[in-house]
Length: 196
Image (tube, rainbow, N blue to C red; front, side, top):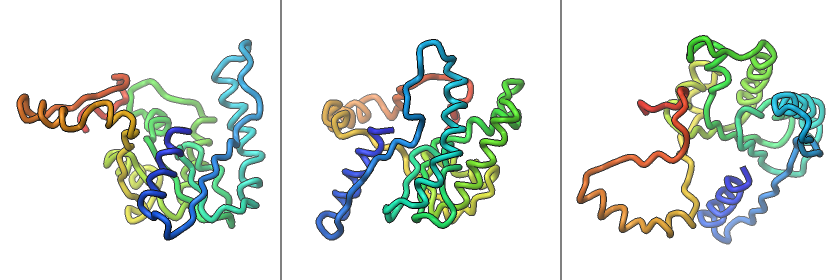
């Protein structure tokens, strides 16, 4: 998520130029220790969630920030009541969709359901939400009870280094010769929105 924070900072600086002073502060709220090799990753993730629930909302409520941006909506449960204005980026609602059976028998636990409900409450406390896709925006309104007017679809940006390396004009030339195409870099897991 550090790359995402850097893109956000650069984009804001480019758009606002010198009219507003912007300082993006990345604050790591998760466990202050790395996962020991002997500890199961699932247990570490749950320890991290408990740590965040117990500490993050208090620390953020007393933050000097004007705007709090949660870069992964799954952690929106940290958004404090009465804290700075909050914005969250929501990449997907896969944990919730698993819980309600959208992916067959692959369901999560009751603890995961409780955590997602807390995340949904945090998302509702946000001033605005950014969704990676129309599919995610629709899921937010349908499953999390978010007003559609609070959600803006903003596809994840390509880092400038990749755009320069790819040669955008070369990609355009290929598309003109061979027709439009979609290049998907990532995994092809069953829960991906392939139709989208």
